[in-house]
Image (cartoon, rainbow, N blue to C red):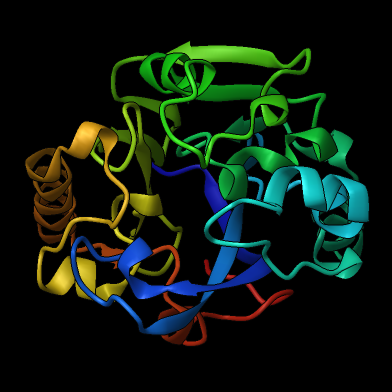
Length: 258
């Protein structure tokens, strides 16, 4: 039986960029507005955070912004103080110390930068992902986002974080990308695709993300198909990660899914 009680999608920033970032060899010249999300999962055995958004300091501080985003092809996201994780937590009467486990889909800047705000929790990430990030496999890895003294819990296999929360290997966008299957106490299960599928278009048309691990389009499409098969098998909703239209259909914080 699931031990999940609540699921909150958290809007931590927005990012305007060329659609080809999200769809492999499609959408050049089309600008999209993408949400940068984290997800707070409350369980009977503690709180899990899936992804952590960006490092606010790198966006708000002009010198750091110039250093990290000055030559970055995507430019800097838009992020406000009230969108930081501690601000979301405070609205629920929580602090970063109330987060027991951070599960990272991957280590790109918009998914791992906020580790500095939850540095006391155990951090689960795939071993291949940390290795790729440390090797600077692409320019979306910002080295000091994951260079701190974090409590790494390196993973390789699929596993249950707690009953009702299962890690799913979905490589392709990055070397060690992972998605998450969440069994809610009342509603349908939810699969958080992470960047295995930025947009509904990635899922519906089986289009790989625009950034790929070593250009491996087939690996990325296999992961999308794997998630679609899992959704069918479990009667789960499959949530893309950077689709503003889809995000706006979800319950908006501080409302939650249960």
